[in-house]
Image 1: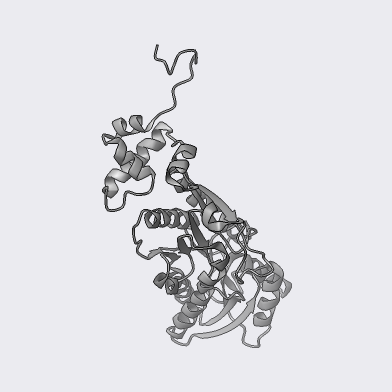
Image 2: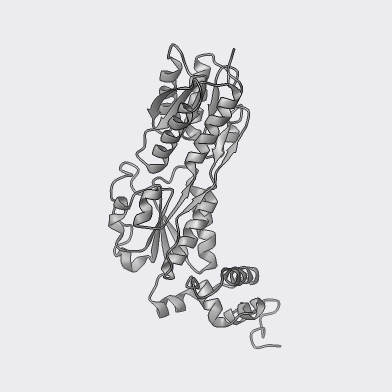
Length: 343
């Protein structure tokens, strides 16, 4: 019986970096580079993937305390999000945390005060530069991160304008809105309404601009717009303004699935059937899109992949690399809330 197994019964020895190296057919130094996030330019992507997959299969976890003491790092990443109440950001965290765990990092979620989400916030740490190794910030601006010190930053869903100062991972939201308008135009709609989120963030400015340009290109297309907060009550009030117009829209394009729920309430209060009298679309494809009746046509954003790609970009940045901007494709999901306009 080996020394590791003596007296342990059925308990197996914890796998070591040597075990990972032997199973992956690489050296221990290669394992250290890959799992330490310092492989860019020194190890091929295929080898890095093989090491990561082998470590996960064996259940290997580095001795974080010893390595942190040796390297002078905390192996902690801060995920800054505009609000903790949105169902969208849960999958973002899950994606980031899974990649981080494979590399021996932990992820701490920090939402600034919801009462002032766009203002520079104070860090949750007394000495940010000593407490965190890097930051991922979703749907924010660099100005809003001034309280977090000089840690390396990757911007998520914050727009290409941030690419000049930090690596970016965005959604192709403009493609999503173009797909929505094309779908509705193909059904015969020409009178469009846009229920816009009253939030000064890149993603919503991009959605609004894409809707306007796409409708402009539809022969005979017209567009009216109302803005509201991303909640059911505010969206209902904004939708009522559009539905009260003499020549009301036959299709309402919403910036968010939750806002679409407000449209459903406004439509039913006026005795309008969805989709017979009014077609409705959302954006994000969170759980409420399938809970509404009829189920909501919407644009699916790969939120978990955003977290994964953001963490990979941050690891590359921490390893001395220069991550290229990334734009994740989105998908139009057609459900029962859209149909041809009434005669």
